Length: 198
Image 1 (tube, helix red, strand yellow):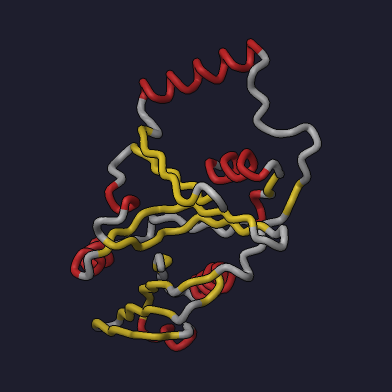
Image 2 (cartoon, one colour):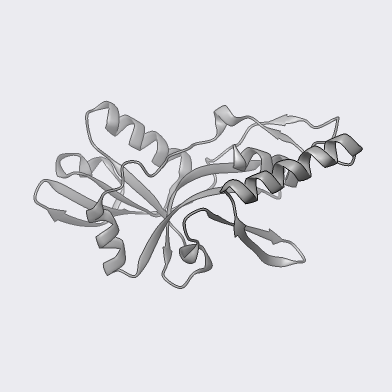
Protein backbone atom coordinates (compact mmCIF):
# COMPACT_ATOMS: atom_id res chain seq x y z
CA UNK A 1 0.00 0.00 0.00
CA UNK A 2 2.92 2.39 0.67
CA UNK A 3 4.20 1.61 -2.83
CA UNK A 4 0.81 2.34 -4.40
CA UNK A 5 0.45 5.67 -2.60
CA UNK A 6 4.04 6.75 -3.41
CA UNK A 7 3.90 5.67 -7.07
CA UNK A 8 0.50 7.26 -7.63
CA UNK A 9 1.72 10.60 -6.24
CA UNK A 10 4.99 10.40 -8.19
CA UNK A 11 3.41 9.60 -11.55
CA UNK A 12 -0.06 11.16 -11.23
CA UNK A 13 -1.76 7.87 -12.11
CA UNK A 14 -3.66 5.18 -10.25
CA UNK A 15 -1.78 1.87 -10.21
CA UNK A 16 -3.94 -1.21 -9.69
CA UNK A 17 -2.72 -3.14 -6.65
CA UNK A 18 -3.87 -6.46 -8.13
CA UNK A 19 -1.24 -6.17 -10.90
CA UNK A 20 1.73 -5.72 -8.57
CA UNK A 21 3.85 -8.80 -7.76
CA UNK A 22 4.42 -8.89 -4.01
CA UNK A 23 6.45 -11.25 -1.83
CA UNK A 24 7.29 -10.80 1.83
CA UNK A 25 10.03 -12.00 4.15
CA UNK A 26 8.07 -14.48 6.28
CA UNK A 27 9.82 -17.45 4.62
CA UNK A 28 13.35 -16.22 5.37
CA UNK A 29 15.38 -18.46 7.71
CA UNK A 30 18.33 -17.95 10.03
CA UNK A 31 20.41 -19.98 7.54
CA UNK A 32 19.50 -17.52 4.77
CA UNK A 33 20.57 -14.57 6.94
CA UNK A 34 23.81 -16.32 7.93
CA UNK A 35 24.52 -17.07 4.26
CA UNK A 36 23.92 -13.43 3.28
CA UNK A 37 26.14 -12.18 6.12
CA UNK A 38 28.94 -14.53 5.00
CA UNK A 39 28.79 -12.88 1.57
CA UNK A 40 28.59 -9.32 3.00
CA UNK A 41 24.95 -8.93 1.96
CA UNK A 42 21.88 -7.66 3.79
CA UNK A 43 18.29 -8.60 2.93
CA UNK A 44 15.64 -5.86 3.07
CA UNK A 45 12.00 -5.80 2.01
CA UNK A 46 11.84 -3.32 -0.86
CA UNK A 47 9.08 -1.66 -2.84
CA UNK A 48 10.08 -0.48 -6.30
CA UNK A 49 8.38 1.42 -9.11
CA UNK A 50 9.52 2.94 -12.34
CA UNK A 51 8.03 4.78 -15.27
CA UNK A 52 9.61 3.70 -18.54
CA UNK A 53 10.27 6.00 -21.48
CA UNK A 54 7.54 4.21 -23.46
CA UNK A 55 4.96 5.27 -20.84
CA UNK A 56 4.65 1.85 -19.17
CA UNK A 57 5.06 1.35 -15.42
CA UNK A 58 6.60 -1.46 -13.45
CA UNK A 59 6.17 -1.96 -9.72
CA UNK A 60 6.84 -4.73 -7.24
CA UNK A 61 7.48 -5.61 -3.59
CA UNK A 62 10.04 -8.27 -2.70
CA UNK A 63 13.01 -9.12 -0.49
CA UNK A 64 16.16 -7.67 -2.04
CA UNK A 65 19.85 -8.20 -1.30
CA UNK A 66 22.15 -5.21 -0.92
CA UNK A 67 25.89 -5.07 -0.23
CA UNK A 68 26.78 -4.15 3.34
CA UNK A 69 27.54 -0.45 3.27
CA UNK A 70 24.76 0.41 0.81
CA UNK A 71 22.34 3.00 2.25
CA UNK A 72 19.50 0.44 2.09
CA UNK A 73 21.44 -2.08 4.18
CA UNK A 74 21.71 0.32 7.13
CA UNK A 75 17.99 1.06 7.61
CA UNK A 76 17.09 -0.12 11.15
CA UNK A 77 13.82 -1.34 12.73
CA UNK A 78 10.94 1.12 12.22
CA UNK A 79 12.82 3.49 9.89
CA UNK A 80 12.17 3.88 6.18
CA UNK A 81 14.35 4.95 3.28
CA UNK A 82 12.86 6.25 0.08
CA UNK A 83 15.02 6.88 -2.97
CA UNK A 84 14.00 8.93 -5.97
CA UNK A 85 15.97 8.92 -9.21
CA UNK A 86 15.17 11.83 -11.48
CA UNK A 87 16.28 12.50 -15.02
CA UNK A 88 18.02 15.73 -14.02
CA UNK A 89 18.25 15.51 -10.23
CA UNK A 90 19.87 12.08 -10.14
CA UNK A 91 19.56 9.95 -7.02
CA UNK A 92 18.09 11.45 -3.84
CA UNK A 93 17.37 9.42 -0.70
CA UNK A 94 15.29 10.39 2.33
CA UNK A 95 15.54 8.59 5.66
CA UNK A 96 13.33 8.76 8.74
CA UNK A 97 11.00 6.98 11.11
CA UNK A 98 8.14 5.25 9.38
CA UNK A 99 6.33 3.92 12.43
CA UNK A 100 5.98 4.37 16.15
CA UNK A 101 3.45 6.35 18.14
CA UNK A 102 5.00 9.83 17.85
CA UNK A 103 5.93 9.77 14.12
CA UNK A 104 2.53 8.25 13.27
CA UNK A 105 0.61 10.76 15.42
CA UNK A 106 2.58 13.62 13.86
CA UNK A 107 1.78 12.43 10.33
CA UNK A 108 -1.93 11.94 11.09
CA UNK A 109 -2.24 15.42 12.62
CA UNK A 110 -0.39 16.97 9.66
CA UNK A 111 -2.68 15.16 7.20
CA UNK A 112 -5.84 16.18 9.06
CA UNK A 113 -4.68 19.80 9.22
CA UNK A 114 -4.01 19.79 5.46
CA UNK A 115 -7.38 18.21 4.69
CA UNK A 116 -9.27 20.71 6.88
CA UNK A 117 -7.50 23.65 5.27
CA UNK A 118 -7.99 22.26 1.75
CA UNK A 119 -4.25 22.23 1.05
CA UNK A 120 -3.77 18.57 0.26
CA UNK A 121 -4.59 17.13 -3.12
CA UNK A 122 -2.73 13.83 -3.39
CA UNK A 123 -4.13 12.76 -6.75
CA UNK A 124 -5.17 14.82 -9.75
CA UNK A 125 -8.91 14.59 -10.43
CA UNK A 126 -8.33 13.22 -13.92
CA UNK A 127 -5.77 10.54 -12.99
CA UNK A 128 -5.93 7.39 -15.12
CA UNK A 129 -5.90 3.82 -13.81
CA UNK A 130 -2.84 2.00 -15.20
CA UNK A 131 -1.53 -1.54 -15.09
CA UNK A 132 1.93 -2.36 -13.78
CA UNK A 133 3.87 -4.41 -16.33
CA UNK A 134 6.85 -6.28 -14.85
CA UNK A 135 7.67 -8.31 -17.95
CA UNK A 136 10.46 -5.91 -18.96
CA UNK A 137 12.10 -5.47 -15.55
CA UNK A 138 14.47 -8.11 -14.25
CA UNK A 139 17.64 -9.12 -12.44
CA UNK A 140 19.24 -12.22 -10.88
CA UNK A 141 17.70 -13.79 -7.79
CA UNK A 142 18.85 -15.76 -4.78
CA UNK A 143 16.45 -18.70 -4.34
CA UNK A 144 16.44 -21.25 -1.53
CA UNK A 145 14.33 -24.33 -2.19
CA UNK A 146 14.41 -28.14 -1.95
CA UNK A 147 17.15 -29.62 -4.14
CA UNK A 148 14.62 -31.72 -6.08
CA UNK A 149 13.06 -28.54 -7.54
CA UNK A 150 16.24 -26.62 -8.43
CA UNK A 151 16.25 -27.78 -12.06
CA UNK A 152 13.08 -25.74 -12.69
CA UNK A 153 15.03 -22.49 -12.28
CA UNK A 154 17.28 -20.79 -14.86
CA UNK A 155 20.38 -21.38 -12.74
CA UNK A 156 23.64 -19.50 -12.92
CA UNK A 157 25.13 -20.96 -9.70
CA UNK A 158 23.87 -23.71 -7.40
CA UNK A 159 25.08 -24.66 -3.92
CA UNK A 160 23.60 -27.79 -2.38
CA UNK A 161 23.46 -28.52 1.34
CA UNK A 162 21.69 -31.79 2.17
CA UNK A 163 18.20 -31.57 0.66
CA UNK A 164 18.41 -27.79 0.20
CA UNK A 165 19.64 -25.90 -2.86
CA UNK A 166 20.68 -22.26 -2.85
CA UNK A 167 20.49 -20.94 -6.38
CA UNK A 168 21.63 -17.73 -8.03
CA UNK A 169 19.47 -17.41 -11.12
CA UNK A 170 20.31 -15.86 -14.42
CA UNK A 171 18.69 -12.47 -14.93
CA UNK A 172 14.95 -13.08 -15.23
CA UNK A 173 11.97 -10.76 -15.13
CA UNK A 174 10.22 -9.97 -11.87
CA UNK A 175 7.00 -11.47 -13.23
CA UNK A 176 8.78 -14.71 -14.18
CA UNK A 177 10.32 -15.08 -10.70
CA UNK A 178 7.09 -14.43 -8.83
CA UNK A 179 5.20 -16.82 -11.15
CA UNK A 180 7.90 -19.51 -10.77
CA UNK A 181 7.80 -19.23 -6.97
CA UNK A 182 4.00 -19.58 -7.00
CA UNK A 183 4.22 -22.67 -9.26
CA UNK A 184 6.88 -24.28 -7.06
CA UNK A 185 4.83 -23.67 -3.93
CA UNK A 186 1.82 -25.29 -5.61
CA UNK A 187 4.05 -28.33 -6.13
CA UNK A 188 4.78 -28.39 -2.38
CA UNK A 189 8.20 -26.70 -2.38
CA UNK A 190 9.19 -24.35 0.45
CA UNK A 191 10.69 -21.42 -1.46
CA UNK A 192 12.32 -18.16 -0.38
CA UNK A 193 13.68 -15.71 -2.95
CA UNK A 194 15.33 -12.31 -2.92
CA UNK A 195 16.26 -10.04 -5.80
CA UNK A 196 19.92 -9.23 -6.19
CA UNK A 197 20.54 -5.50 -6.51
CA UNK A 198 22.83 -4.83 -9.47
